[in-house]
Amino acid sequence: MTTDGRKLRAQALREERRAEILRAARSVFADQGYHAASITALIKAAGVARGTFYLYFDSKQSVFLAMLDALMTRLRGSVVGVDITAGRKAMRTQLVGTIERLLHTAQDEGDVVRLIFHQGIGLEAPIQEALEAFEDNLLGYLQASLQMGTELGWLRPHDHHVAAVSIYGSMRYLVDRLTSDRLAPIEEREDLAEEVVSLHLDGLLPRPA
Image (spheres, rainbow, N blue to C red):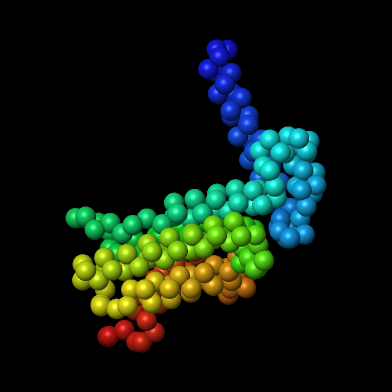
């Protein structure tokens, strides 16, 4: 094996070991909660030596931040801007697809999402700051998207900031209920996404015959 080959293999092994520690940490946090979980519990669950653990993470907080960063990366990847080019899919269809991807990611990352929603109060400042920055970025994206929709004539004139906050707030609570199994079951995620889009685009008034 060449020197470059050995380096690549060593890097792959380091990345896999880091991923194993994160997977173990997710299980510990899910069972014990962030505040009650200890470094010792994380190390035991990962099956590594204490020195090995500290090669990858210097604290419980840094582990949680890595988990949070992975979740945010997945959520960002779920959000795709509306295509406005010729031959595009209908705006409603695109929005339903985006909501469906977000719900899929939220369910797949349910243990981390529940930790954020139910133990977010009292988390250390760096974690709170990361959460707030993510929320601010998402709100900014929503607001810019709503403004573009208005300029294109797809949406009626409205207060884009208020609408963005309302959409984000309702989606946040919906995801909370969904990941906590407190939402009346809908057979298909696409049906749930369609209902969300319909509510925000059409409201609750009867549609014209």
